[in-house]
Structure formats: C-alpha cells, structure tokens
Length: 496
Ligand code: GLU
Image (tube, rainbow, N blue to C red; front, side, top):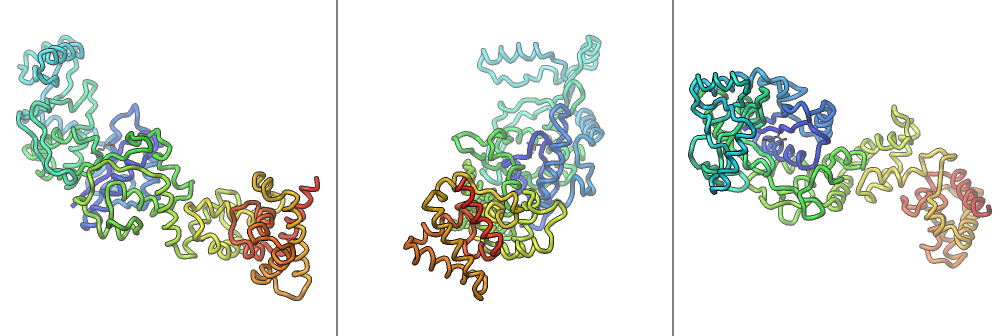
C-alpha cells in the first residue's frame, strides 16, 4: 500500500489539509505501507516558497513522517511538480501519439457560443468534441491563423462507476464527463494531468482526499486506463476515498479565512501536536463510540478508512482545546517540562539558548502544580510567570487588583504580611504546610474570614492574578523575601 499527501503550496497550511495528511498517513502506517509527500506546485502565479516551507515545517511538527518525498528524496523523484515538466511533456506526447489526447484550437468565444447553444437546447454544456478528429491539414490551418492549441483528453463515452472507500459505489453518467483540458495553450500542464501522472509513477495505491475533488475522479480514472495502455506507471487504477467536508462554526464549510482553520496558529497557542492530531482524527473518524481521547499509536493501530463517516464533520475549537488538555495531562512531568521550555523562551522568561540551571529546577518544581490546570501550554506560562519574571517587571493584573485589593483586601494583605514575617522569624521551616498554617491562623481564625475571601487578595498580590497555581506552594517557591516584597508593593500601590 502506498498513500500520499500532495498539497499545493498556496497560503497557510490549514486544518482540512492536515486532516487529509493525517488520514493518509495513518492508513499507510496501519497497513505497514509507504507514505509519500509530494508538492503540487504547477501554478507559478499562486504557489510560493514560503508556503512550501510552512507545509514542510507543519508536517514535521505534527510528526507525520514520510518515507518518500520532498526534502527526503526517494526513487520516484523529484517530488515537486515544478521540477517535473519533462515528465509531463513526455506523458502528454505519448497520450497524443496513442490517440488518447488531441490538440484543440477552439477560441474562448467559440467555446462560449457553442456552450450557450447547447444550454439553450438542453444538451450537456461541456466540450462537444468538435476538434477531436482534425486532419493534419486542418490543424496546420489553425496554426497558420496563429491559434495556440490546448491539449484535451478524449473521454471514452461510457458511465464511470467506482467504489469509494468512504462513500461506497458512485456513478458518473457519460454525459457529465466530456473531453477535458490537460495542457493549457501556454504549455502548462493542469492538475487533472499532473496529479494522476505522479500518482501512477509513484505507485500510489490509495488516494485519500477532500470531497471537493470527487468530480475530478472519473477523469482521473479514465487517465489511469489510458496510462495502462501506454505503459505509464504500474498499470492499475488506485482506490479512492473522499473525506467529508469540515464545517466551521457557522453552517458553512471551514474556509481558509476562518481563524481556527490556520494551522500555524496552533503551536504558538500552546497545542501539542498529539492533541491537535487526536482532535483532527475525530473529524470524520472515531476510535470507539464512548471514547474521544487516544494516542497517535492507538489511532494507527485502529485506523481503517472504511470506518470514516462520509457526513460533514464540525470543527469545534472548544473541544479541540479540551482534548489538548487531556493530552497535556498524559505527559510525564519531565516531558511536560521539555514541552514548556520553548514557550518560556518565547515569552522572554528564559534566554533564547534555554533556561539556567536554577530556572530549570524551578520549572521542574512548579510544572506539577499546573499540570492538570491547563488546556494549552501557554496557560502554564501565564500561571507561572510570577515566579520567573524579574521582580522589577512583575505586574498585577489591573482588573484583578481592582476586585481584590480594595481597602478590605489590603487589610488582609497587611495581616498576611505580618503572619509571614513572624513565620520567617520563628524557627519554623518555610514550607507549604507552615505557610498554610500561619495564613489560616491569621486570616481565617484571626480575621474570621471565609477561606476564599482570606486568600484571594493574597493570591492577587503575590502571583499578580486570580488564576494561579496553589497559593501556599506558590509562596513557598517564591520565597520569603520576594513574597513580602510583593505584599509591600501591593500595600504601597494602594497607599498612593
Ligand atoms: N494538490 C491537490 C490539492 O491540494 C491534491 C488533490 C489530491 O489529493 O488529489 O487539492
């Protein structure tokens, strides 16, 4: 089995694309087959090198490794269609020589006129085959007029039936598939030719792709049948599976313009590749009725294309985040620390070359405190920032300060400061339990406050936010001097 992913490098990689890549990859891996990554960059006006680089990066980040293709090479290269012009020219010539394709000289106006006439008479409005059997003299006459021909493929007049791996049997009536253009008048080969040519030459056995390409399938099957006659590729037609549309938050197809569709946003937002992959797998597939969370090896073990549901799948960002949170919880502590480091670098809390020994030790001590409290890795950065930030840069969230550090709140802060000073002065250890005991005694017993009211102001003053790791652990890790300095700053800030 050989599957492939063959995007066109235009714009940013998007979710629909990655879902196609994931299913093709998982299908090959499940069956011990090969996975090819090819780039379909035959449209120089839209394709960009930047988009190509992003595609390669995103595939690497997701961990969808390919056995053959761009960057890694292989026996059937090159794997960028822009480097394969001679391959297509040769195939086209062989198709013409064997009578499967022909030059058509119709002008746009002529085509339009005949199309309108056909419509008016209720006949199919595709190409009517007028230039199918031109004599060499007729061709020469058109060329003398300065007309540049397109190359059309001669569709055999028959119905096209195939068994889609997702949708079952599908038939296109002969009247719906006319002779189609495979090479433009300017010599540029089109997707309808280059895609099956490469699939044939690269030995692709199973084509998985979006439902939007379903209507091109009969034409591609016809090409494979011609290829078998002229000896291009292995002489067989691959199986096709058309994956369901992905719908956005409205009732419309998720489009490149929808913000959740841009794959490049997921990594900076704090998604794990395995969390995103797990969620994308659910866009048309499930491992079991009552189970949403699975690892990628589990998916590979279970994935069968026949289990994909042909109905449109809805993309739900909230659910995607929740599943990411589940995958964060599945990480071991050391693994979590490794995954967090780049985010601390990006936030400017660690130097670009990585954490110091002390910073790493502090992250190792604090990561467990937030491990179960986030859906995105960036939330850990926000929750732990107060520990890693330079004291001079520490700021309290103004909204949280307004809510928690009013006059009553500051009375609590004052009492907490005193209790912590006394704890530090006593022989007692600066420990989570000691801190909790001292603060409970002073605030809950001493001031008679409910715990929520007692600890809220202290939390905001010390961590800068109402959302933080557990308070007493946080104070222990921050240390006595830094904690008291922050309580002082809160008191001074309010005093004017
Ligand atoms: N280059 C095509 C696309 O990006 C691939 C279509 C296919 O998988 O056959 O839509």
